[in-house]
Image (cartoon, rainbow, N blue to C red):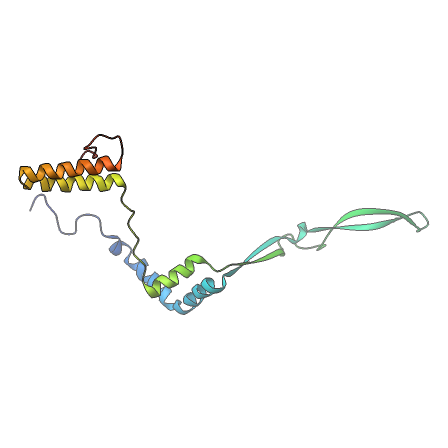
Length: 184
């Protein structure tokens, strides 16, 4: 029996193998609903969407306030009002749930849905790399110059070094010549 090294069927299985059944089920579910999903995406990208919020309560807990006129003993109005709280659904089953409030809000077109649609058609643009800082450019220049100076004759190296010192003096007045950042 071999010892050490990679063994057949050893180690953790890749995610694509471990979740193969779930991935296939999801792919087939999405494929079966592709047209409605595409239409919903375009609807969201072009027109925005509607969001509905509904609030339900038990029917026996919904109350309303009524104002009744107070009468005297003879049944004549006194000009005073009495406030009373009465159930909206008297005798309702405590298990019965009713819709109390429904709020519909219209949302503007979704920017991410628009970007996704455009990226699918035109291709996703490549992200631009962050611009190099001045210190990074100077470090790259220093590295390149060291390589060049090592391969040229001493007289050329001295002239290049003098030109670099002149450039650095012109770049930052009052600084020492050769003020390049240290190499890596």
